[in-house]
Image 1 (tube, one colour):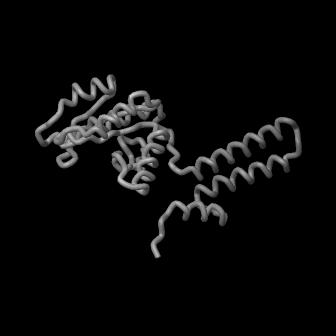
Image 2 (cartoon, one colour; image 1 turned 30 degrees about the horizontal axis):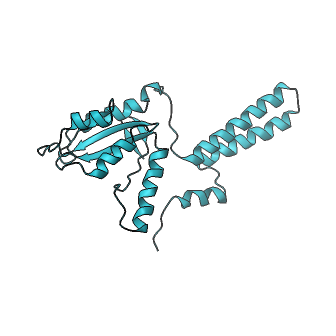
Image 3 (cartoon, one colour; image 1 turned 90 degrees about the vertical axis):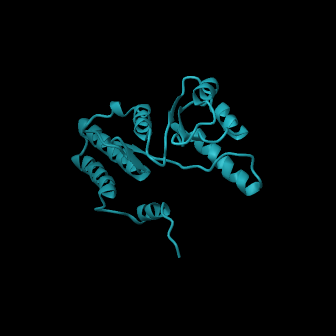
Length: 199
């Protein structure tokens, strides 16, 4: 997870797509396509200093009708270009923005960042708003909201305040899982399941 112009972005760096040489490589490439299906935004990296391969063209064509936003980064702009990005990308993916960048010298990266921010709709996020980056935080907030809603309904219906107090306690417990004041064993297990610990 990185921050791009104040916006939290979760990146998945995938392997290149090509004709697999064996079953193991095929599994890896299949996993890439799964990630592409789940992505909100796809950033395709192409090498502008080498001719496009059949695999490159195939990937561009495969993403033509994909229901997500696509940006193309044509890398190595510091070297002589050997293919016409305007023509080829314009024909294969009309309307898709592409950026000539140099990962070595940083040229064009600011424009790519700005485009990524725009596609993510960051302007719709209020200045005083927050972003949730962990699924367990999202689930805890949803639970707290459900408990608070239940407490309000209990009081609104004229039921015992003790019932509302129980819901409020549950809401606080859910929030404490985020702040770290109260962490249950199953929460710790979920946290450590996201880390790879060497032996």
